[in-house]
Length: 72
Image 1: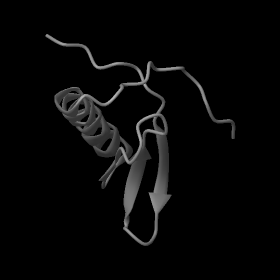
Image 2 (image 1 turned 90 degrees about the vertical axis):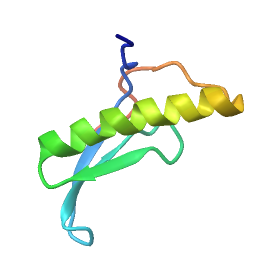
Image 3 (image 1 turned 45 degrees about the vertical axis):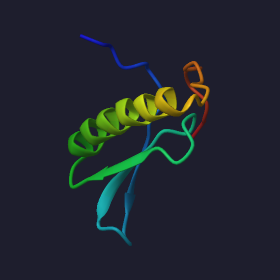
Image 4 (image 1 turned 180 degrees about the vertical axis):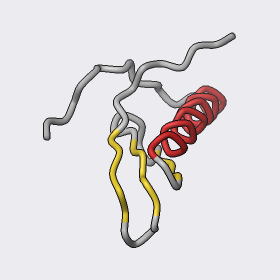
């Protein structure tokens, strides 16, 4: 089984979307949503895999996870 790289996920509530949003800052445009924290993170894991698969298919560079990028 292929492991998913450990990218930082920024999770927040969006009133406009009425959902939790999970953004992956290191992967441009990579974000997911869900009605719970858990669902948003699970959906983000799927989107990270899809993002990487697509990048590989089109020859786009895939950044290495750098760990904690943002501070609250």
